[in-house]
Length: 326
Image (cartoon, rainbow, N blue to C red; front, side):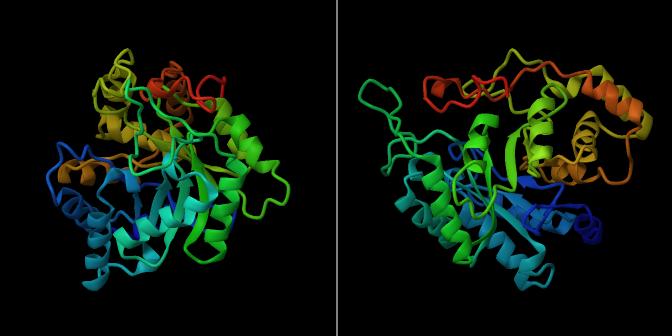
């Protein structure tokens, strides 16, 4: 199993490698049992996963880190086999807060470095102890930060050996250009984590990222939960799509496996999140079949340009990334 996972990687522009399939570890801390992330990550490592996508703001990095350390201790993996992605949250974008935020993640994980550290959103929020700061009327409190200054602080973290690769998330073309055109840019962003699935295939941003040698990491690659507090319910359930179901039938695969295979075959890294041992195993079974050119085209044609994750609560932020075409 593990050899299969290790072969399925793509190169990053800085010489490192990223596994094409990862496990997303986000779970609502209010409704997720304590210890769930610990057990799921250990199970995923046994299944063959080597890539884990986490964040300080998920409130479970201590469990993810414990799982990784236990699996290193029992000889299943070495630290260098594991690829962990952490994220810089929006209240830590001022340059002097960047390294302390990364150090919080490292302390929770009890690891010496992370493999990839990304700016979670191009939008800065007011720094402070509250991750989602609001005023007394319930309005979000924003902050102006120079993304280039944030980036320089990240470059210093890489130079200090705290992180191997640097990337971004939810950045549009204009925001990526801002970094690429930065005078004295030392370390280019190697990845952009964005929503990407058959109903939202992102052809223009994908093409731009290819030109810039940026690996696209697709979140919500099999859709999302139907949580109305942050999910656009106008988007129909992806996994019920007849095209995906019928292609799956041909290969003895599910619509979810077809949707994951579609992106992986396009060189898009996928990080489906699941806290179900069965689904964690199921989502990994995508390397024993491939889609024909016609099937890839028919899935591309499902694109509806509809986002599941619109982040509309922050649509009035000056750096809200989804007003631009791409």
